Image (cartoon, rainbow, N blue to C red; front, side):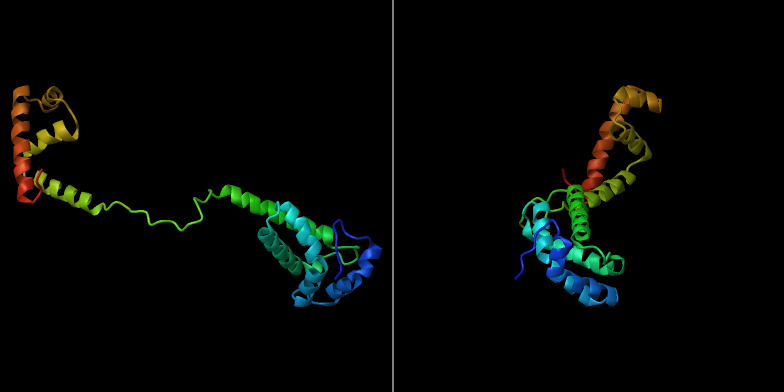
Length: 198
């Protein structure tokens, strides 16, 4: 087995390592031919992997993925590769470096994962009971007299004081107090009739 190193070998070293055969194959095959990627893979896999492992801080799995993506991009760009150069390693290294940079940017943009385990099913509060409660209260309010609905609207829903409610409705403070008392009592009865107890 031959040992490859980066930086790329000299033209003489490339000729010994089969580089002319690779250039010949790239020139004579169609860009979609698997021969191109096979030849590239055989010639450059080891040196490219060693280079990318340094870029990925020793993460071999990530480095393998980057090398595969680099080979795919080389295959797609086979007709544009400079077959007259002594080595394609500089082009492959540039592509691989860009892939690593893009991967890092994607990882930084994505929120960190919380852990290795599967996400536990997060219980979602059942809002149906609250919705039903609102419907029942609305029906009970409609069952009250208009004067009682009006006084509860001013004092409870709008959160006004007895004095502010009296001023807004144009009635005496004592009338507001008695209406609130009887309105709350009537509302409690209406809710009990609908099955709601305090």
